[in-house]
Length: 201
Image 1 (cartoon, rainbow, N blue to C red):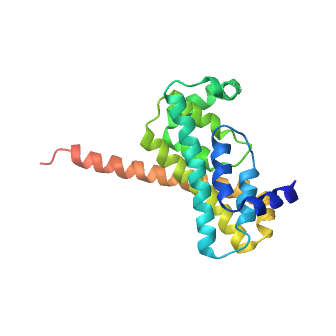
Image 2 (spheres, rainbow, N blue to C red):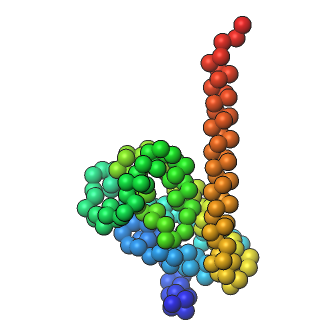
Image 3 (spheres, rainbow, N blue to C red):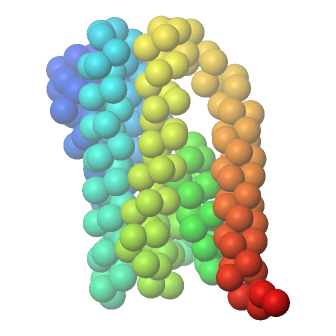
C-alpha cells in the first residue's frame, strides 16, 4: 500500500495534497492517506518547500471542512446521512455543546480513526459560529499537519516509525497543552472581568 501511495504522490505532485485534503475532509473518506501523502512529500526538499506543502494540506482540509459545515448549517443533511448513523452522534453532540471550541479544536488535532467529520457535521447542526469554527479547525489541522511535515523533513523515513509509535502520546501532550492554554485564557478573562465589575471605593 505504501509503495502505491509513494508512486501516486510522484505522479500528482504537491498540488495533489491540496485536492486530497479537500476531498478527504468533504465528500470522500481517505483515513491516514492524506497523512502519508504529506509525509512522503515532505521527505525531500527545502524547508520553504515543506512549509508550502504543509500550507496546501491545511488549506485543502480547511476548505473541505468549511464546505461540509456550511452545507449542514444551511440544512443539507442527506449526503452526510451515513455519518449521522454513527453510534457516537449524541455523545459528540453533547460534548460539542458543553465544551464548545475546545472539543472542536481537540477533535481537529486527533488522527484517524477518530471521526472528525462527524464533529464538523454536528457543528453545523448546532449552528456553531463560523469564526470559532474556522479558528478551531485551522489551528487544529495546522498543529497536526505541521507536526507530521516537519518530522518527515527532519527525520526522513524514520518519521513514519516515530509517528506510528508515538503519535498517541504526542497527541495527548498537545491536547494537554491546549487545555492548559484554554484554562489560563479563561482564568485571565475571568480576572479581568472581575476587576472591571468589582466596585472601587
